[in-house]
Length: 363
Image (tube, rainbow, N blue to C red):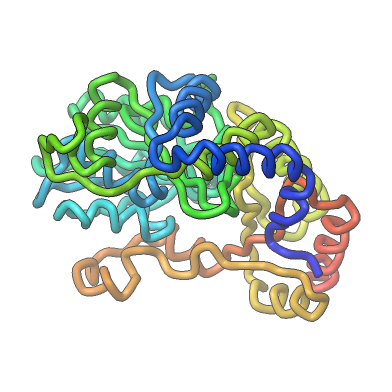
């Protein structure tokens, strides 16, 4: 059996440190906004090169809190990608704003900067690029567009902790960056968790108030806020795992590059231009024999997955509102994408076995 991700192996590698950190957090009995939360926020900000980092309860909450802090309200438009997990668009809708989907680049699967400007209207207030599968979006032209049109730039970094482009970590180019610590993420806790990186102290303080019932002083509430706090036990786990994030990401890159070496002549392998750091939250290729490959891998008890089979503008919840919208690149990629197992500890022989089976199917 080859799983998509092997969390058990990673846990056993770090078991002594994680167990000790968890027990210490329990012994302290400071479970909500405790010392590990503060320490993790400082350590994560330092690692990423962010001005500030504020944790919260999930990646979806991170997006919602960031959108609120950016001043986006009902009726505003937010430009984003149609080829991503629905949380990106959900968070826009939570505040009554309207997602505007722009097609993706066929190589990176990220939003195509060349198409953004044409989608801007007087109601546009922000752009949310997604660093999909750990591949950094092309941030320089996106930032230039946002600067020219005075739009908020909010990065969806749920799948890209540790990725970088043009010398900057994802989450540090825009005003706000939104991270998920879902267990399977490159940096994952053992439950739900999230974080917002902030370019200014003012934004960080807004996020802190919003995540804690609209309060900065106990029992004094300045705005309607939310209960969205990372607990101290999860923060303790993340502090341990953060020390190993480069090792984890390098392991993913090792696996990905071996796949690409073995498969580049039979499928469209993930794109890397050598200018940034792709951290391969997923290893996603394109093939017109997807179903056949998946069936053959399943016969050998090898996992595979499709992220994502239906672009957001074709999802039932959005289908009526976007019935006239055609985004051909996202639609084509959704029909042909296939993700293979990738995790830092994946043995070379497992990678070679997966590749060999795919080659047998295609040849």
